[in-house]
Image (cartoon, rainbow, N blue to C red):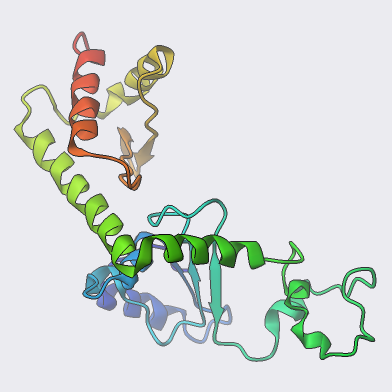
Length: 220
């Protein structure tokens, strides 16, 4: 499995080359980058999916904001792999003596017995927003992310002191003003993991975030 942490075709190809011939299928897991494939001019480094991959998993419930859960799995395999892995041919659900081709009972391919609701979530959102609407939503998320970075650079009250993240998280939760996750990165200490994906966010929300962090940590 190759996750979203790799950006750029060259990096993807190097991992795919290393994995060839060792047995496991090569899977690509796309989150934020795949959402940009809905744009007319997507960012190439975020949307690269090697034709050598055996599968691609796409989660519209990430950056696109589709209702949880909403995922798609595209397979190169044509041997009915999912059914061979998950199918149980439960007689009370998937009768084998129907008047039509029982291969149409796709629910037997997944452990949930049906994923049509996932398709419906994406279809309804796409129908309501339109292709251009979803494109604007994605562009807004990236624009606010850039705005957040630039504002952090300009504010004197912000330093890269990662050890304070758990303290600030406790304070914001007890006050009820914000809810931001934090995590370590390799050998580095905790830092806040900012996810700018809510389509209703504005620059005013970003400004509040920064001011609230300053207020909560002014004595640290």
